[in-house]
Length: 273
Picture 1 (cartoon, rainbow, N blue to C red):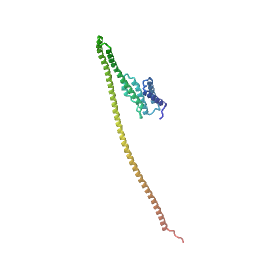
Picture 2: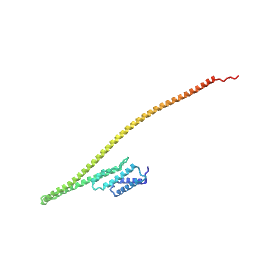
Picture 3: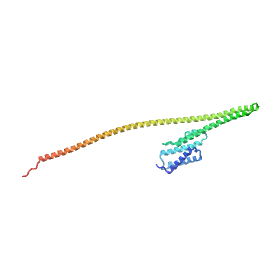
Picture 4: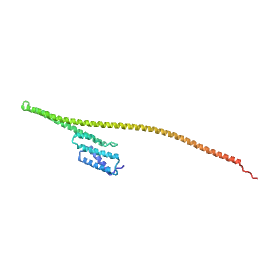
């Protein structure tokens, strides 16, 4: 089936959006405008009298929803929410496999994971800077002065509270990240279990189909052999019947000839004087 002009423009814009997202430029403002245009063209395509087949239209819808999910994920406030949302992005599953959408999903997930790691490292950096600055002050101060002792006491009272606050923040980030990772792990395990069950069911169905095909092949071979045998028998019988009819007609002709001769002998024509 040939594509209409509307469908051709839609496919070109869809491929361009996938290229932009694959290059990591899905955060630009024009990408969101392209997605809005894709949604409008998809609505017009569904209303068109020459719309494509149902499975192709479903693939178009899933691709647009996947690209729109990228923009929605990018607008989330925290990086951990982006990581969780990126795990639920489902690319189009066409019969030939949409490798570009899968590649985009992997790149986005890796990008958000790196952002979470950088955020954890930056939250840990102030603690190290504070300890380094404290050691430098202790090296350059006079150890015999009373001012240094007072300052040391003051730092000893301030430092634990600041350290404990940063430690609590760091522990909170770590715990939230662990919870997020646990949720992602649970989701991945459930998805893997579902895929395994579906694969086993498909394998059992395929095995049953193969057994049915083997039985059908054996039955077809048996029927072909029986048909060949019956054909030979029919040819033999038809030849025999033909020969019987020929001999029967020859016998009838002979009997008719003999009867005619006997009749002529019995009823001879009388001689006239």
